[in-house]
Picture 1 (cartoon, rainbow, N blue to C red):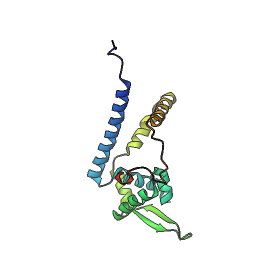
Picture 2 (cartoon, rainbow, N blue to C red):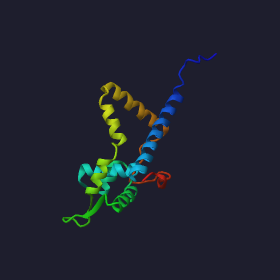
Picture 3 (cartoon, one colour):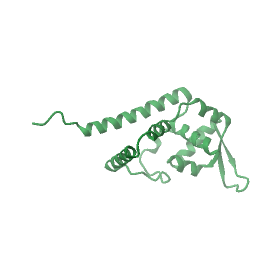
Picture 4 (cartoon, one colour):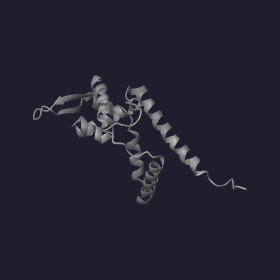
Length: 164
């Protein structure tokens, strides 16, 4: 007879992943409803606010999305006057993305990014705890076959359905 007190780790792992996914989704929907921004849009604004200006390719790499996906995000942010594209005076082929004052104001009004809240919480953990979490998550990624795709190639399925 099976011992009913044995934890069902598989269930707990999947349940925890679903809770994380649900939490991210709820946060993103609230952000969109209250501020008219998606999470990827806010992440782009946040990165640009810290960098002052950067080219599209560098922004895409920094946030780990493909250039065409980020270009669509940038189009929408530009339409809302949260950023501008400015051609380089030195090299006319380069176009820099720069956050506007309206974009900076939006960053000030929005709640912190979930990733920033998580980083702050993780900072309070011991190195041993952080190592355990890191190795466990990396192993989960491996078990799921969810290796990091090259966002520059965007060969993964259903990129049109990504929240942008």
